[in-house]
Length: 269
Image (cartoon, rainbow, N blue to C red; front, side):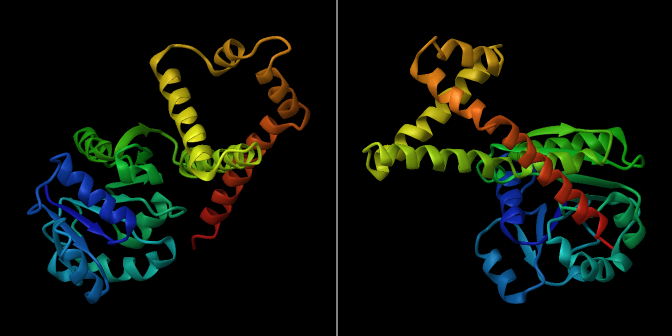
């Protein structure tokens, strides 16, 4: 399968490296289209597939076309590639807020898959939620899922609107985790640990807690109960969190991200 990635930014390069490492595609089957000639030349030096700066030179031979450009660049991109597309080609878009109906209208194609990845895809630990138009065949959908699995885990959803929810949870989610980690590191520093010690304490605690959670069929509330003891230190911290509505604030924050994702989608035109 010949894959064309339009956009040689962070996600475009992440996909290229992941596909080659996972043997999804060889360097000969992988092409990157970067509108900047200078950047195209620098991407070529990275040895992650052939790199072009003109769509006319690479679009026609692609079986799967991945749209990995910024949403604000979509209009110009659509105008430039529409005359070059073939109805049999499958388009995979990771552009936030650009809906399948909009892509269909702007490009005149039917086989469209839309996905929302997140930043840990850079190390093969990503979470990607995706959906598709009805015209995408079962075989094509499975093939694309295998491609996306090269960057981590995937989840297929029937309703496109759930991609906005995925943006709020898994797309923005790493920032929530880092926000909490940073707060705990600051608490550790205030308690007397130096920078490196605080980072080790917090990062290893997060890693251990996550791996313990994944290794057992136990819910988060049950793990909390096991760590907590009546009148103990954990209970003291959790009591403060409950008094300050920390849990509700986290939920409201995710809801705010969802509303913003919806707003961006409404303004896509």
